[in-house]
Image 1 (cartoon, rainbow, N blue to C red):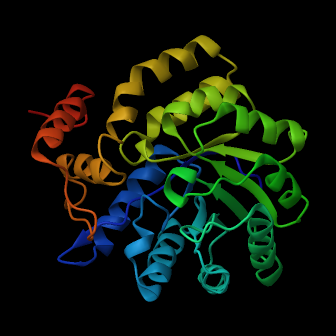
Image 2 (cartoon, rainbow, N blue to C red):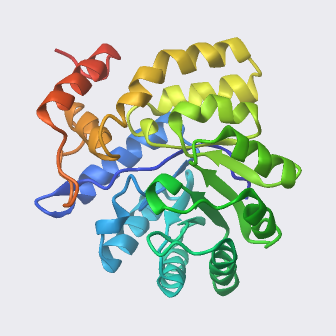
Length: 294
């Protein structure tokens, strides 16, 4: 199983407080029709932190069943409790996920040895390919390149979603692992720069709304080897990628999808809908890219 290409960190649509399964399936179809390589339900963008255990596994299960082998499914199963991470990962495997994405434990701020032991324990307990997820802006802890190097020796830990915002960190991981450990960009706006220092793809927020363009960027750089085309695509879509973080993710991308008529603009507290000012600015950007009319 090779981890590469464009994966969408897919949102979890809600309607009247519940998971909106029909809108979710429709969004999955849009992604598959665009030619996406994979979907990542129950990540940060999927508001996993506010899904209860049954909902969490149900969202992964819906994804697996609806995708039906047409793309890879990486279930988000991270937790700041190692025991809970094992239970979620076991559950994701049981419902058919191809891989699991595990964020660094948040809030309790483990040491680098604690991080190593956490991921090692989950990998030992559940026989499924595991992708590490480093997002210190959310978790309060950075998985150091040296720790990633140690973890890369565990057979079923196959890659990392890197969202530290540091190209130096990406380069260090690539150097230490001699390019044999898959790095996926976790920052849309750094996707092109990260590919230039060894990333094999992206787990993207923006691909919820522009999957074709993210695929075009990936193919231009890593498949066609057309650097100028990649730069042109990157530059063109940069304002839209930046707009996805005008407020806390996934507030803007859910608003954009609602403007496009794909989902209802509903989030779970403590997240709330986008402010009127930012919402209007976002709508103008989405309109400028031809994603909505009027």
